[in-house]
Length: 196
Image 1: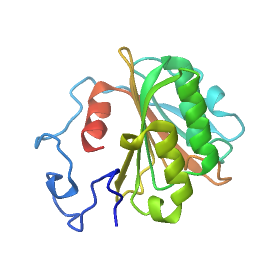
Image 2 (image 1 turned 180 degrees about the horizontal axis):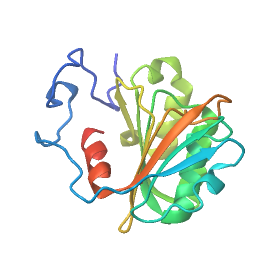
Image 3 (image 1 turned 180 degrees about the vertical axis):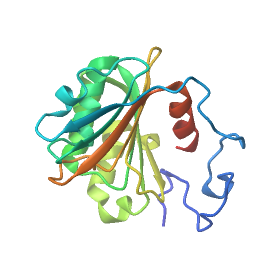
């Protein structure tokens, strides 16, 4: 049963193309990047941290990278917030651990995150009820959105940046081959924002 205070976009009909069965309201239109193609900077980062791997990321940039799991999605978030300055953030993940929640809370308390939304798999509330309660306590009841998801995404935005991160990484470190794509693109950001 979905908690009454968490918005749910769960549906058994996952074959829809307009998102209505998922409770999503985004324009029924062909999505496409309208800006000129931006070449990707390819990053093989087997021994460096997220800040070093993303050191040269600039506005309008596109990075595609692989790691050996020495940094996490939370580490990428911190490194990008160093670039963007204070921003609104959406975290999309299958689950979260308490340390990830505490890291995000610290980023909010210190002003690096202005507003935070968690878009998380609907099983999180039943698998990790204490963590889900902590998310609601720290970030507000409306901050937790439940859905069927296994995606790992970050959306980071302010007046100057529209960053989207897609990754195989979880919020915590896993010492395995991981991939990440980072784009500062209003089109890509809008595409994912409309669905979350």
